[in-house]
Amino acid sequence: MSEIQVAFFRSKADPTTFAVSPDRNGLVFPNPEEWEFERTETINPTLVLRDSELALWLEAFKRDGYCIFTAQR
Image (cartoon, rainbow, N blue to C red):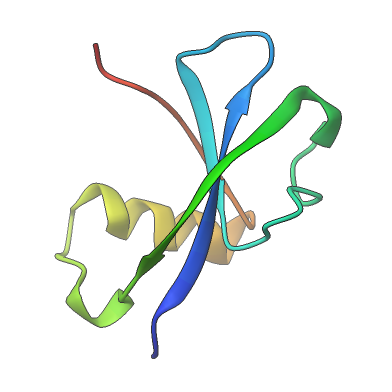
């Protein structure tokens, strides 16, 4: 699998809650209007370690098309 570009979104209701998705438009979210685009990054799935946060994202992408998480302070 080649590199994929993922987009990060911030919740408009809670600035510590983020979503990441390979869908840069954010249309895969249940309520797309509740998210604002933050940035993009490129990841290489072949370099992702098992049981890492990135591995959880990849599984969520397959299942839901996105992953929601809260930033650590």
